[in-house]
Amino acid sequence: MTRKRRNLIIVEIVLLVIACLFVYPFLLVVINSLKPYAEVMTDVIALPKAWEFENYKQVWQLMDYPKLFGNTLFVTVVSIAGIVLFGSMAAYKLVRTKSWLSTLLFFVCIAPMMLPFQSFMITLIKLSKNLHLMNSLPGLTFIYWGLGCPLAVFLFHGFIKSIPFELEESATIDGCSPYRTFFSIIFPIMKPVTATVVILNVMWIWNDFLLPLIMLNGNQATLQLAAYQFFGQYKSEWQFALAAVVLTTLPPVIFFLIMQKNIMKGMVAGAVKG
Image (cartoon, rainbow, N blue to C red):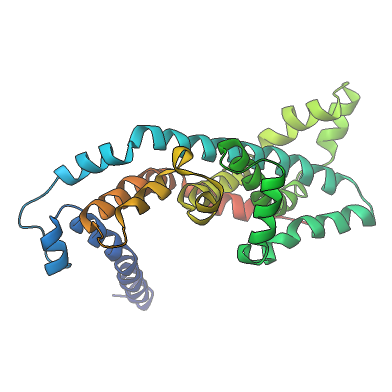
């Protein structure tokens, strides 16, 4: 065995161990979601003595899963559509406008990425109340537009700098308006970085708990808030809570596994030139 092959095997073993460390907690959640309450409290690590698939049936009904799945899907899709649209258009304008003002505006746009949400949470909630955005799914998506655009602008900005300006000049000569040039020529080219923006924001918005908690009431809840209902003041129904966690996290996990190859492709593509 060559030295290179031996080193490769060692690296693969180390990565396998790291992967197991990350997968193990999720496996525990799945295993314990199939146990009755007594077994969950007795031995967390052991396999179920009797597989309680009834837990998922009860959670499906108690959560009103189809309705809340629709709420969560609506918030995620509309939020990402706005983030992609406004983020890409803003980045395009900032890149193609060569002035000190556009440079300043770019740094202003991405500066919120460095601010923790908790630092402006109270101000955001007061502003949302004044704008009548509370207890509203469209209002929640509007907030996500503002929180998600800084990262989107940053990624799109880096990618657009690698697109030759000659493409737009040719389109202008052929009579294309600025909007048609962007949507017909520039935006299709940005597919790799768009996929990256979509994937990152799906994982964030779908799994977000804090913002829906402070923005929505029970009638407009999302899946993440519904999973919290199994924890009360005097009792925690762990078997149902863990089943709810599995049902809530499974859709974005499946989406990520399907789309993960586009993340690094978009990151690398956005780092070329500029």
